[in-house]
Image (cartoon, rainbow, N blue to C red; front, side):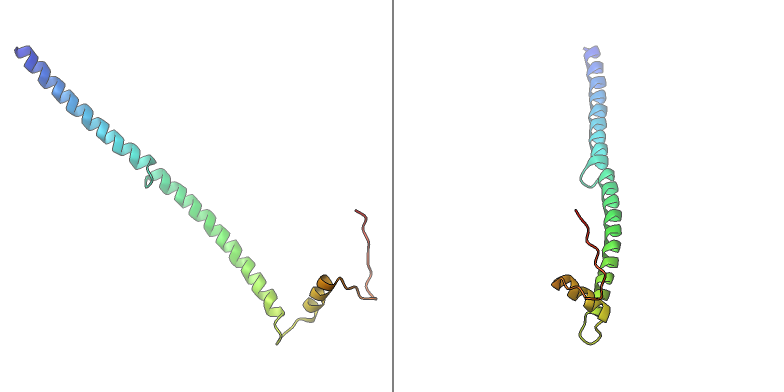
Amino acid sequence: MIVRKRLRSILAAVGLYAAAALLIGYFGVNAYTGARGLRAHQDLAQQMSALTAELAALKIERERWEHRVSLLRSDAIDPDLLDERARAVLDYVDPHDLVMLRKR
C-alpha cells in the first residue's frame, strides 16, 4: 500500500513536470514559428528592406518623368524634346537627316 502511494506521488510529480515541459515547449515553438514569431519578424524585415529599395528606385524614376513632363509644358517647351516626340509619333524624317536602314 505504501509502495503504491509513493509510486503514485512520483508519477504525479513526473506527470506535472512533463505537462509543464510540453506547455513550455509549445509556447517556445510558437514564439519562433508563429505568425508573430521571430521568423516572421525576420521575414518582415527582409521584405521591408526590399520594398524600401524599390521605393527609392521608383522615386528616382518619378523625378525623371517629372523633369521630362516639365520640359513639355506650354510655357517652357524644349525644342529638341518637341522635335523628338513629333518625329517619333508622326514617323517624320527631315530631308537633311541621314537615315540608315537595317535589315532584320
